[in-house]
Picture 1 (cartoon, rainbow, N blue to C red):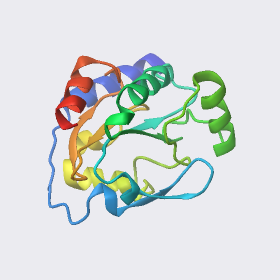
Picture 2 (cartoon, helix red, strand yellow):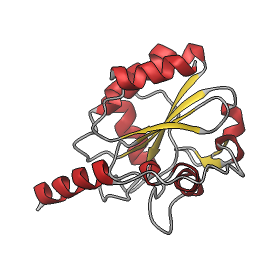
Picture 3 (tube, one colour):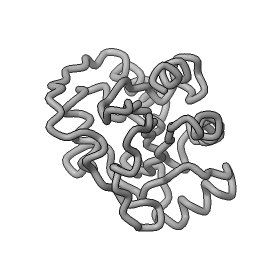
Length: 181
């Protein structure tokens, strides 16, 4: 059953078209989201930075990407780059509490990049930033699985999206980041 779900997910990922409206009534920096400790992050604080927003999960086959996200963060953070981890249980693979996620990330991966509280990333109850991404960039901005990546440029607009299969340290992602920095 798990293999069937994975195959269907892969097929959907490669055959969905991007139908964006790109009207950008709001930009990324106009939103707020709670951090892993429950404090509000005003995304205006990230203005003039390039952001890689990644929906994460503790029990996913892609969870090992935390290592590469941390490496990416350490490589580029001095150049106005931010990795923003967004834990989500939208695919039923996340721990139940923010504290459990925080402990898991710190103990197992020594994560030091910003992490949000657990939110939904798809469907009717998705966090508003993911609805914004869908509205302005189309279906490719909707996470099809955990560790989906959305690259935000310094203007607060979506530059590109990357599937769960794209490693954070891949040339495909690092080249885009370097071009934006």
